[in-house]
Image (cartoon, rainbow, N blue to C red; front, top):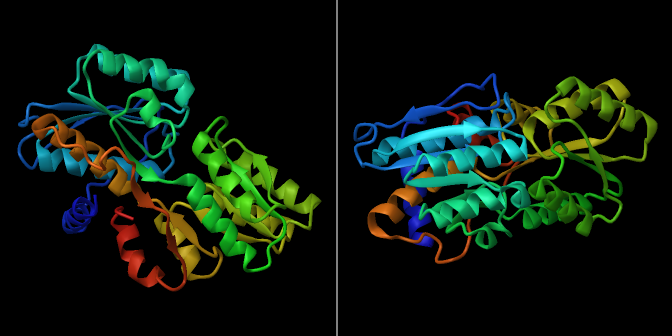
Length: 325
């Protein structure tokens, strides 16, 4: 695994990133290819995520997938829906279309199990990415690319516990997400006083209002752990409006969060390298279809956690602007 990851890392950093803007609907779909001409490999890969429209995190995942499609001549079919049942329908539609392979997030594994298993029955290889590290093999996915969310959460908890934090607020922005719940559980394992709060991640104003009310009501909250970059920005606004002294850190990285780390408004970010997740998911399917390669040897390939803070932000900032970090 290490030689492959090293080679992949070199490839990722040496290729020009292919960026995409946020989608306005929940079911964006596109064809992508190049390098060799689109589809010149003869393979079509369906790439299905639980992206919430407007969440810039997924621009990086999609950029990595599109670059891999260009490099391998794969035709890429991207689609997304944050509703678990609708995501399952997108996977089933890909099966019915007889694509060559499927890459999908597994954030709600129980809801997606039927569709993923139907792909296996149809002889279509599936790889998981981003969410579902503990469930992907049970569902029949061959490989997995992402972060160990429990480990990441525990790492955050230990880091803030060392700072004397007693009552962090962990903000879950999507109901039923096993990945987000694992992150907060990890934080709590190191800081027993951790409190979870549920917000609607699709509505920034609602997130800000909910957090503002909570921080104003409970002054013992000394830290806010956001689980994505946009929620962290909402938390900064809520902190200011409630006159809270709580510090803020976040999972995931975007150009705005990178700037906030540099100016001290965000303590650190935990980067799972979504560009790499998208890139490896598509390229691994290409290699499996072409050569029968199994990346990871039956184990998940970890793309994080990687801490970004004041010590390394100057080096990483340019990559955030290119949409590769």
